[in-house]
Length: 400
Image 1: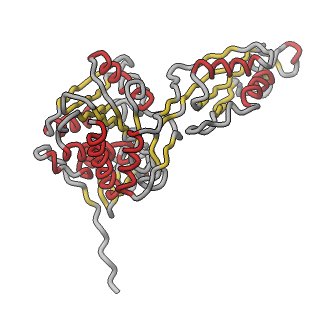
Image 2: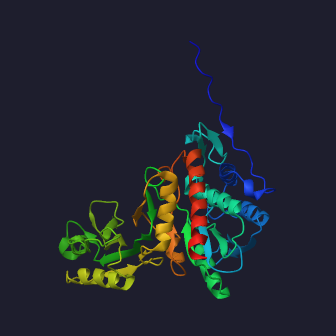
């Protein structure tokens, strides 16, 4: 019996800006993948987004910030002049591909094979950017209200000159966003599993105990800091911080390293250091969490140094209401699944956007994000485009 001919991998066609209403989201995503944009070098991918939005009638602002020492490209685009303003937020920067030889398809080729789009950023999150672009351009200009895009090139990196700076720029010019949909991959297994209605906060710290260096054979002439550091760690981790809340799991403190910088066996070290991170829920603010950590460490009655790191973030929640119901309903219409409201996972740029408007996150299935052979089914991009299209229609029917 003759076997079937193997399916030849194909490169998805390029998207032309000539007729934006008919842009194929898979073609858009593939072309974005072909514009390598490892943080902080996302300008070429953002130029594609700007070109497509300009062709669709959007007013496009290119915003570059450089407080972190490297120029970071960002974009804000809007169609319509009045409220309400529904904004789609996302990023086109990606993490490095690692060893390209380990990939079954070239990481920046945008290859489609057997109904799957392959490439770095397919899931996180060029696929979602392309899906919302396609949905928004097909919808056109709202009869009342506005559609906008906030796209950054600095989400996967330090996040110093990306969304946080665009939010500051929006505030300074009095630009109002009423609601935001962020396209991060939110689904653990299948499209429609979950959407994010909040995120835990994050706080990191460095705990140091100083001693006196000396020979292990003469401990009376030295002071070993390690037992005291271990006692302090025990105070930090002995009891749960809390037991969770209505929308959040329990806050969690993890010690991620204990270091003395000592490669030999006959030397008592001069100091010992522990590094830790806390992912915390709405039982705490940054101030109250810091106070609780200090209270626990002080309970040991020992001398120590504690330094909290910059870049900490607060927890936040978009409370159940018309906007969260609108998003969940659109997802259920397309997928047949009622998405579970979730606050799990790490941080996202929603931590900046929540300062100016309610924000909900919904995107693709995240199983391959940041991995070798990152990929997403073509059908998921198409279904996500349909979901975003329904969200847009529902939004202006509800809020305009």
